[in-house]
Each structure stands twice: as C-alpha cells, then as structure tokens.
Length: 230
Image (cartoon, rainbow, N blue to C red; front, side, top):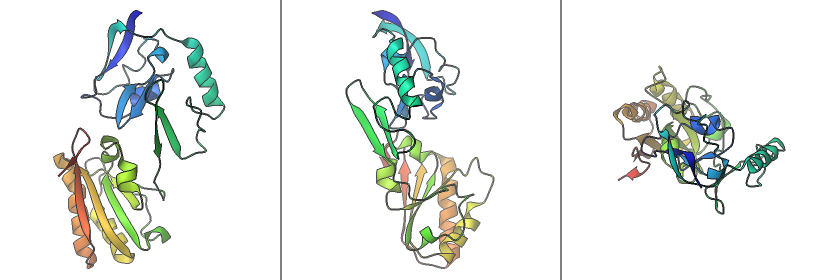
C-alpha cells in the first residue's frame, strides 16, 4: 500500500541513536553506526523520531510500504518486557546485541570489552588489567563511525576513550601515569579524520615520551563515512 513513512538520510546521520530511542515501536535500529528503518511494518508514520534527530536526517515520504502492524509491535514490546529482544535473544543479561537488519536476516555483534570504566577521566591509574596490556586509546566517535570496532580494535585490548574537544582536561598527564606505572606492551590510537581528534593523538604521543619507556604504538584514522584511511 502507499502510505506515509519515515526516510533516513545516512549521509546526514551521525550515529547518535536518539531516533532509535525515541521510536516507541522499535522500527529503527542502529546498524554499523547508522540509523536504519529495520521494520517498516513497525513504523506508524507519526514521526516521534523526527524532533529527536539533531542533524535533520529523518523526513517523511509517501511510498509503497508494508501496513503498520500494531499487533506485531505489541508482541515485540511484550517480549522486551519479558527480557527478550524481538529476535528472540536474551536481553540485558547477555553481552550479545542482535539487530534485525531485515525481516529474515539478523546481524549479531558480540561485545569485546574486557574492563570498566572506559573513560580516560574515570579509569584508575593502577589496575590489575593494565598488567601486560595492549592499550586501545580511542576518540569516542570512532566506535560509532566504524561498524566492526569491537572485533577490529577492542578485542584483546584494554580500552580507554575520550573526546579532546568536549572534555576540558589534559589527557597526557593521566596517560603518562598509566603508561609509566604499569607494564604496557603496546598502544593503538584510533582517531577520526577531523582536526579536533588530533588532540587525543598528541596527548598519547606526549604521554609515551614523558613515560620514559620505549613502547610500540600505532595510529589508525577513521573517515567520517566509517572507513580506515590508509
């Protein structure tokens, strides 16, 4: 049938997830760092998600689409209340997040995070998980921009994240203490291509130099559209 339904412009989407949280029907999901209309039969066309979007990535369009299925929406909500995701997977008790990419296919992402907290401002200077660790020091936007961030970067590393533009702190001082006072084996810096992300790269480089240690390190830069820049 021809009906009014939302349209998401992926080029404008910044991956914040506000629209997915605002959608009471569960029609929107986050896949590879972008908002997707994963169930058009869950979209009632009322547009609660529109004012939630900070970039104006969501608009209405009229097109051929499945009819709104209120019964399916209510059933999915009931499953969620019972601790299950719409795909049938367990909810918060599991580290597995399932996104319904289509009506028939599911994309499963397993968390590779091995410690908490992850914010540079919050992590202790000394912790047992730093012993023999490979550090991942990343600008927080990178995890939203790069879809396979957990498997390609977080796996087998201790993760520290921050935003040099939003956090009014000098990361280099604390990072120096962490590197100097612990047995760190290597450091991977992941940043976005935008200029402000140079702040986190510079902070790590200063910390490595100030620590007085020779530790292997590398920088990986992510483009705004979620690709590694060689």
